[in-house]
Length: 312
Image 1 (cartoon, rainbow, N blue to C red):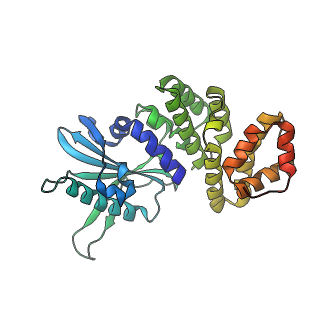
Image 2: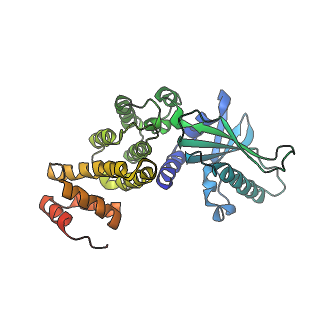
Image 3: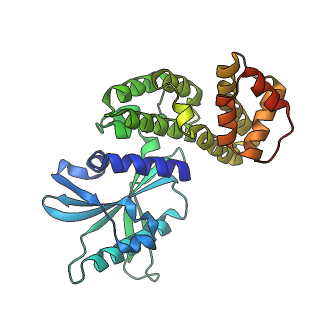
């Protein structure tokens, strides 16, 4: 889930307090000291997912793992990560006790039945006392819009498209809240981008991407020009196609790129033009096709779609 992971990690770095406040139970006093940054990061680059905290005045470290789904390899990844993290903290302060560590897997999609609240990776011999790692599971896609709102931050509002009861009306409210609450134009664009990436995951089959694109374009004109969000959505759609069938994936891609075409020419693409757009997205890459759809004037765009595909 490369694009979603990158997007969420970037937002989390901007708003670590909002991330932690929802993931540390009990309403206890929390001080965020910063992200773990150590020499072990050169070996294990995911160490930037761990935050140093003080909870009730005591040092703690929280590891947050964003997961597309709770796949079988997640327990291994969490256990492996904690090993790297423990080693990094030991090397950083030799002779000092390593602060207590905790992991949370934030899950974006998966089965409809409720996921457990905790997971574990056992490494002990059969029949022996437990040895390994436990971690908490925060299945954000199984939460309601109200539950995500209750977390009290625009950071968690970007997950609303994943909510099991997400609607167009709810997204319209979220877009308006982001528009009002974002501190800068750059942050607003990043939050809108995260909304679109989450909507493309679509764990419940809400099919809200098209409506959300219209809302975002109305609020932030030119956002699609400044970010490769369309490319990210194509990748997500093709991944979903492995599970839902190639025909549905192609329909999703055609709707996304067809809207860009319509903005340029004032009409929907013909069946032949639609086929050409899809073939070029696969052959040339989605970013080049997006650039052509946004940069070429009407006649030049039609000619470009009619030409044989030349490798870039």
